[in-house]
Amino acid sequence: MQIQHNADLRRLNTFGVAARAVTLVTLRSAGEARDLLRQRALMAAPMLMLGGGSNILFTRDWDGVVVVPRLLDREVDSSQGDTVTVVAGAGEDWDGFVRWTLGLGLAGLENLSLIPGSVGAAPIQNIGAYGVELRDRLLWVETFDWQSGRTDRLYNADCGFGYRDSVFKHELAGRLVTRVAFRLSRTPDLELDYGDIRQELADRQLTRPTPLQVAEAVCAIRRRKLPDPAHIGNAGSFFRNPVIAGAHAADLREAHPAMPQFAALGGAKVPAGWLIEACGWKGRREGDAGVHADHALVLVNHGKATGAQIHALALRVVDSVRERFGITLEPEVRVV
Ligand code: EPU
Image (cartoon, rainbow, N blue to C red; front, side, top):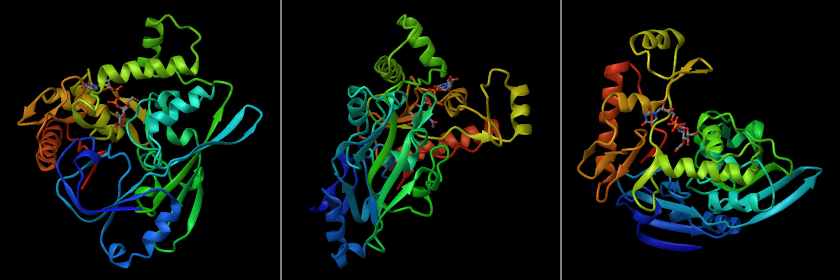
């Protein structure tokens, strides 16, 4: 295990904001997590699990221990007919892992290509894109419990998955995810219903695409719309798409006929990007904190913005959307 004091977190968060941790612990194996348990002084401090740092905004230093699991492992666990179970360590880069599965001729994760972050963080968020969520492909999640020192395996149905939500944000918050297993297939059953994908495939004249071609289409769409954190600091969608009650949705449809709405459990889902753009925020900048010019749901760090400045901008966006539409946006990104 690697232990660093007064550690710089700037390169460990994709917003690229300055923040420090009293202690930074990098784990290379689940065994090292058990070793860390014996370090009483460290265990007494507030602990933060950090994956790829692609879904977090630091507005202050972390007055405790930041744990980064670099647990690397990719294996084909078993196969039964067309169904293949693959397992990945929490520290694997998500997109690298997706590409590895596609290279093995396995279908299932193609729509989730190019999402920044680590395998271990993926179930916490129940990452999703282009009509597929992680829960559609996940078999189990292995976690390490800092209280009992036990490793448990949670099967899909016990993970409490919801839209960008899971039990790992609630009852099991703070658990260390060590490994994740996925059920993939040698026979593609492609999900092409998301409008952008159909259009992209049509533009490429692909009527019977392979999983790899779908992945390439997804990558092209993402590259066009979403800023690459390697070039401009960001954490993808900053807010969740809100679900509003039926009556409220109907009122808004009447007042704003152009507002897109999608049927959802409990009412209608409205694209937060549309709401933010309608309030005039798209491409706006306050110092180095900004709203991305190509996608209003993404907040960006143009260079030297602090986390607090980006957070202040986010709060102003929330206020104006609430004032205009009566909808309160909730962050998707974890604000620390
Ligand atoms: N829109 C605008 N203006 C904008 C951006 C979007 O009007 O500036 C409207 C358009 O009507 C567009 C609609 O919003 O058709 C939806 O936009 P998009 O397809 O880009 O999807 P999204 O709802 O903004 C969600 C996920 C993304 C995921 C895409 C594709 C959330 C919070 N975000 O975004 O996930 O890639 O769908 O499936 O659910 C992420 O979680 O970080 C992320 C990028």
